[in-house]
Image (cartoon, rainbow, N blue to C red):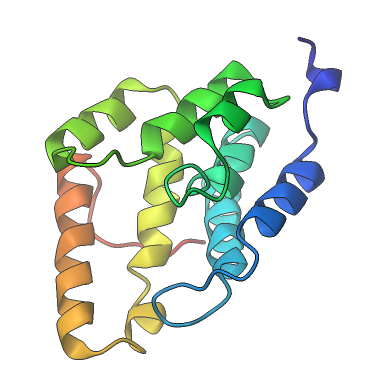
Length: 156
């Protein structure tokens, strides 16, 4: 498949927004805001179009907004599909296995770094109750450590 047969970034964005329509994040905000922030974070970190496309789709399979079959058949590069699958958590999977898959997939670490940065954004966490905020902050810090990423940093 040649590049001109792949979905464009605006097409991927529209698909992701439609797939996640009606979903909200833990703070009750439209889920598309998170997708936009991760895509912008990937772009700000120097990510390429394949990584930005993966950022728009990074939670689609995990959240069952799109099926793994859809992803397999989509007009996306193999690398974009591999990144999406790498950052898709699997039921019962140990965090160490999840991190190892991300690290083994070219381009996936940058997408996960942008995702973690937005998830751990203090302004985003501030609207959550203290117990949830503390639990999530610890979870994100542990994943950053497993991935060898430095401490929390803005999404750009």
